[in-house]
Image 1 (cartoon, rainbow, N blue to C red):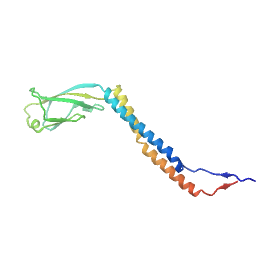
Image 2 (image 1 turned 180 degrees about the vertical axis):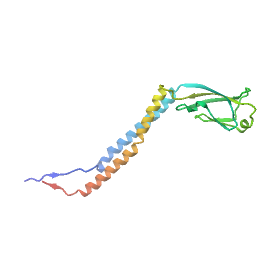
Image 3 (image 1 turned 30 degrees about the vertical axis):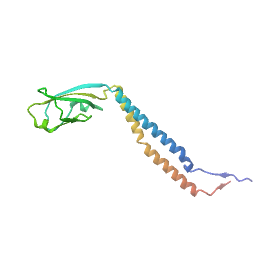
Length: 172
């Protein structure tokens, strides 16, 4: 009578690491490049809007523009003048719409400040919002890659451990 060998594979082996690692690397590269392309594309198609905010009291030292509450708001240009018409240059601003006034502007409370600015944001139903939503979904998926890598590593370790204890061959 012939004896047949039955071998049971339990878990992943070290030989399974190569394709698993290559797959994870390729998925990571595709996600990274895809997110970069979507971000660049979003910036290129964004519609510019003009905004104004008049009679700003600068005594607090900083001012947040009223439009800053819009989704994905980003200021690209900002000019300021006193209400009497003289231009101001001693200030800084962030893309999020926060203006920091210089000490001389804060000290001069004889007149208020008017601003004119150019900004972009993700308007409801716009292409910009669709791209932002897609990029956000891809970024959420990318967060899972670390968990997937840990699960694959655990499967390989368990596979090696289980096969090292299962050296005894079953004969029929």
